[in-house]
Length: 151
Image (tube, rainbow, N blue to C red; front, side, top):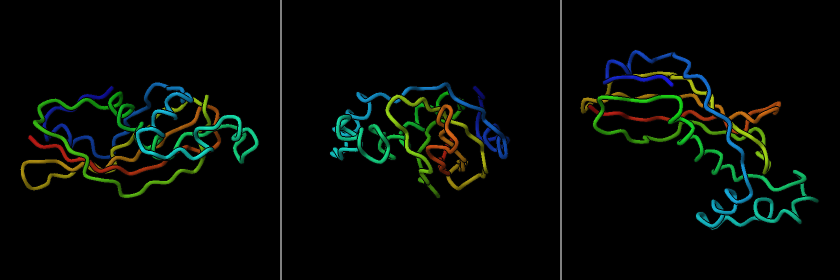
């Protein structure tokens, strides 16, 4: 884990590789919980029996579940001290090159694409994230997330 302190510590991260998170397994229970939270109960996510004969051979995680898991995995890569508030400012680009099958393990790779001071005594971070699948040829998700941190 990398620790940045204050706005100057954040701006110094521009271009820095943040490494990898630990691996987490995607379980059917996690997928079902996400389906309940979002109301997306499509059979490719929640019906293991039907999904066996579907395009992926098993149930798969929702793309937005994979995207949402960036939040806790990112917490393993970067700790920020000396900031009063951080906000999720949005996403510039998100792609899902490969499905995450139930039982797959995923982890996050991160890199600080840019870190620039913004009005209101803040720093805007653009982070390039790749959600990798253990043993997978393609990533599950590639995204650029934008966060703002304020002192």
